Image 1 (cartoon, rainbow, N blue to C red):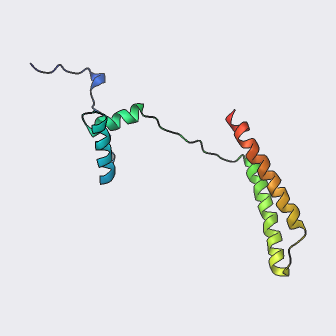
Image 2 (spheres, one colour):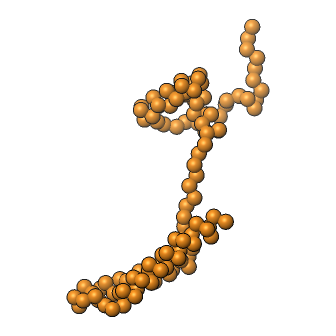
Image 3 (tube, rainbow, N blue to C red):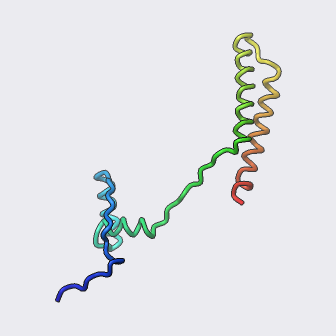
Length: 117
């Protein structure tokens, strides 16, 4: 007796091609075997459809924060140039470094709570 035909929605008729290195392929086949699945394709399909994928959020800077960092960088560059040409560190450099540190601490400490809510 012949196997019953599958419904159109159940048919696997949309191929997708991906490439693996030989060690990757062997590892996938081993995982498929360990999971008791009939093929590496079924293992990859199950992982793609039901596996847990961790999606990392990109952490882009607010344009105002980026602009402030750019301005601080310009000031730091000017002070560094003065230090190199005159051979002494400008007094303003300590103040600027403290300003940079305070700004970064504020941004880092506020980043997780403000962006996650």
